[in-house]
Length: 206
Image: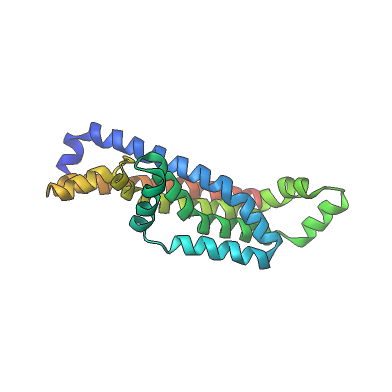
């Protein structure tokens, strides 16, 4: 813990890099996963292929995936973002699909009876009712991304993994522990914040 407080400036700077990496990855992942999740909910048979592909990516070891991406994109921030966004697809697509598919059919039929088109139906009915399940998926994906992002230092993407890898390499275990502790704090903060948001949505639906 001594390293954490003595070098707090470095830990804070790398935490900022870690947050930027995680938020960018999560935002891109969500932008891809929402339409895919809606597609999976609308067309379960074809959607099974999408989930299968997302699940296949999720099973690839992080270092292996980063190694392949380095050959295509080179080292750096965006290589890590590509990997992290790909890993999040399985969680996000599945939860978006589950949320949309779980909307009460009576609400959908009532909206159709009012003359809503597919986009209006999704935005005004399915999206609000599915939001708690979707946020639960975002929460899980965010924690997962924050954890996996520590490996991003291996491809020069920055973040708290820099402390962990450097500490292990230098046998400075206080340095490695500082990076690990900071990553845990970020994961807990993300989990707690999104859990509160999820509960807030659920209360509004009751």
